Image (tube, rainbow, N blue to C red):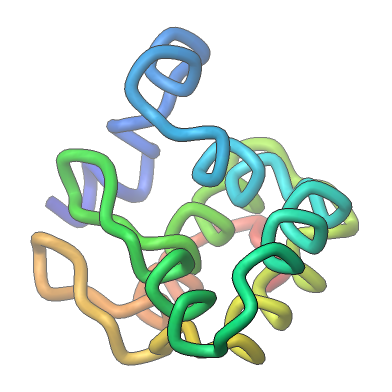
Length: 115
């Protein structure tokens, strides 16, 4: 699993368009404006946390994982700001993916990721 996730096995242009929500694509591409705008709509902190914790992909990634993989595959200067925003609204930094890895594990294995 580590080798597959380190190469972003869920992520290619086709799966990003067809199998991922607009939310996940915004996280992946580090689209700070979209993420900020979308998180302004849910009023309660609990509703925001539920949104950033929604699981997608065969690896059962939630928002923070999508940001980290996106920073590795298609890095922008906004990925760090998006990750911080997700953590600020309640993303669990100790969440585990299907392989039992946390976002920190993915950061450590993310060569070239600056998150």
